[in-house]
Amino acid sequence: MVAGKELQQGNWRGCYNGLLSTNIWPKLTQNAGKAKENLLIRVKEQAFKCYLFTIQNVYDSINIESLAKNFELDKDYVHSVISKVN
Image 1 (cartoon, rainbow, N blue to C red):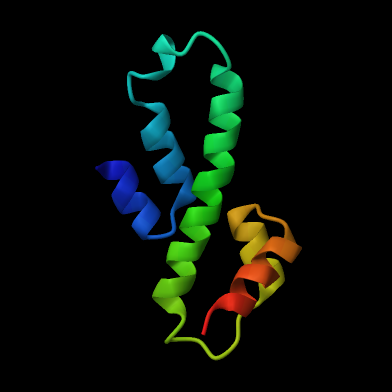
Image 2: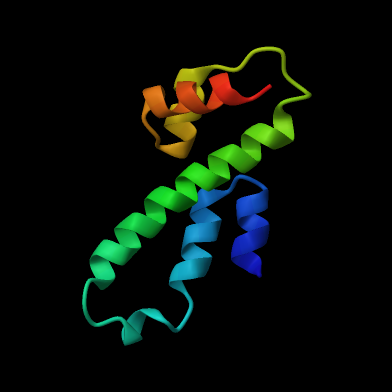
């Protein structure tokens, strides 16, 4: 529940840490590291999208470089997502 609220606010770090604190990880003996890597990527992407949809009516322009830095995402990915919003 906490992770979902963090994601909704665009806080990918809080969401990811909340998901890591669940008790499922010790049960994943194989590929737990890969699962965590994939989860981190998806959490960043979804947090960015939630943030973008939250602020889209507030801002006329957005700095792609600062968003890419804040969400630790590739600038091309950020640009692609922003160009699809409207």
